Amino acid sequence: MKKQWLQYGLLALGIINIIYNVVLMVSGGAKASQQITIIVETLAGMALIFVPQLADRLLHIKISPTITWGYLLFLLISVFIGTGWDMYNRVSFWDKILHAVSPAILTMVGYALLTHLLSRVPNSGSLVGTYLIFGFAFAGICGIGWEFWEFSWDHLLNMNLQRYMGLGGEALVGRAALMDTMSDFFWNTTGAVIMLIYSAIRSHMTANYFDRYYIVKRH
Image 1 (tube, one colour):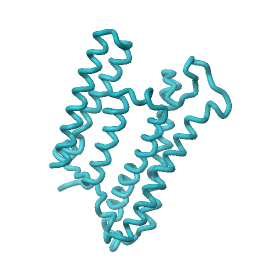
Image 2 (cartoon, rainbow, N blue to C red):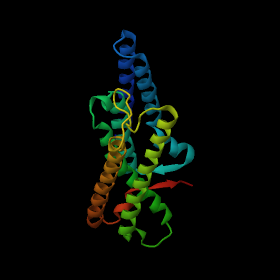
Image 3 (cartoon, rainbow, N blue to C red):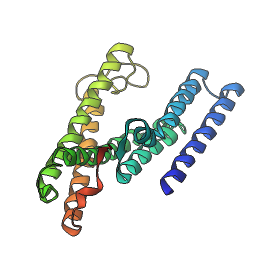
Image 4 (cartoon, rainbow, N blue to C red):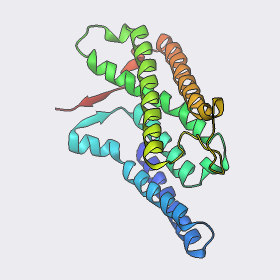
């Protein structure tokens, strides 16, 4: 029930963001193209709110509440606050917050995948080191994949996702051109390490700690 209230709260926040940006666009308070982009991204975020329920009902895939909460948190800070409130431009390090939070959530997904792979292995819950290494590595690989994604769109549409250009459109060179990508890797690794340490501590305090992370196909 608490999860549903959060989802409805995100839905309401999305509606408020859309109304606000429509008003800005109509009144001429901002560039129409910018507001249209925000509205489209907010609508996409609203469509993603109920993915866990849809996965359960349509595909019979059950996602653990812990992962679902992390997923909804990421939607909140990335789409409904980050995009809807234009925090990426208002707060210079907002993107870095996302790069620190996302690997923690991806580490949970890594745990869930390993739980599935080891479902037939006796006492797999005791393989703490295996879980920690796999989760950390999974988050790292996903972080690398995201940088490839940004690089591809920068190459195709010159979107400057990797901040290789200054605010005036001038191309950066040397270390300056690498700083955004390398700082993304740094925060991605930092988030994964924090989750690794947290999981290591909790796994010694709680029996079968990794059982709370699962993505399973219901029969």
